[in-house]
Length: 534
Image (cartoon, rainbow, N blue to C red; front, side, top):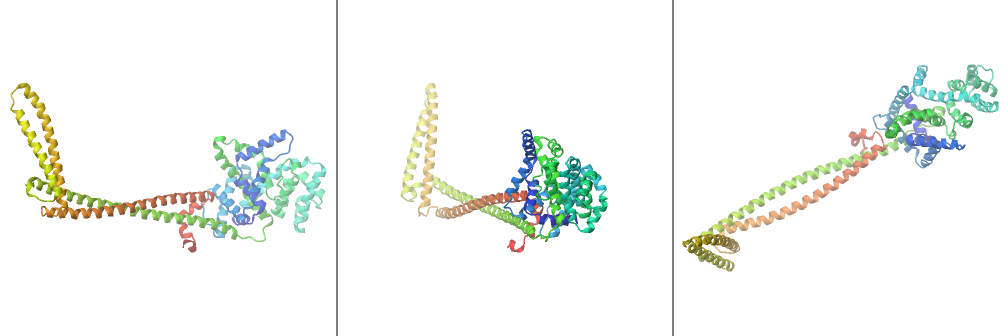
């Protein structure tokens, strides 16, 4: 039942009440509290009235004026699940929201039991109440207890005014409930004076507990507004009391007993941790602020439609991003496969090119060897061949002359001449080697002349070279096409990588803004409506 109440309360919480709770949980941190309290102390020393924390909340509320209620409701709900580290789920059905609300109430209840020994003792005497009711009663009773001593310091006139407003609420109840309250208070008549005396003698906490026991949680709403009206007398700054359900929160936050332990918990180096700690300490209060308006007066109509529509909008946007990422991942695999395939094709072409080039070198070497062993004078290839042949013969004649000169020097017997001849012969040897290289060069030129001719000399080898050359042209053209294609694939792959990075950033941002979406990551595609998948 608690889960249903929290869920109903959340979707019916609207306007300023919603924005105040939202600002309190999502827009409040240790820095705000510390700064506000510091400013308040300075103002107090200057004998000025100040409530900077309330002012901070008011500013945050003003910023949220144009934000739709359902957007804030979903944000508030998801923030609560994040703080409690609950696993996210879909919220496309009322039951799913209620089930998660049950976990929220139970976790916050257990958290309060651990945090507050007073609550643990209180809960032991409230076993007939639900977990949610216990938390609300406890927090409100703490506030009422703080007022007992203050009420005694009121003058009679202020006590009567306060009691009059309490009695006004009692008088609005059915006769049956009024009778029960009179009986429990031990009075014969419910006059302003009788109520005043009851509060003065028994204490506001006892009187208020009786009224709540008889009338239900509706009195809490009246009580918070009533306390706001007398805030100055109680010494509690509650200027936002006109917004039902929030005053007790401000009272608790304004209390140094709440702030100091939080601030001393870790210092500046652990501000982040302390902010989380602060929010966790706020959770029981937040649950109370959400549920109290609904539990006090209910709602004419409870509809989850706007809440679920807002959630579905975010969920479907998240699903679309997941599908986009999946498509980009598939495109990446496809491109990588095509790139590997194309690289393989290029590698095969390079192998074919190598084979054809090797074949050409083999055929040219055969022609070269044939020319070297042939009588060149008998060959009539073409004019270019004849020119290179003359150059070849001239170089050959030069080599013969050098060799003869070397022999003449070798027969001289003079000792010093032999030494000089050795030096001279060494130079001649180098000259011969150089000329031989020239001969080889002209032979290779003649090989090219043969290949360009129509001579019957080495026709088969020439035809093989021509065929390989044609194949090489086609292979290089094919290779260029494949390289161009590979480059285009790699360019597309780079773009896909950029798209993936951008989508992942968007997904991460959505997961950060909407806690729990990351838990749906594995199953988003099948959860997306069919129309969206198409």
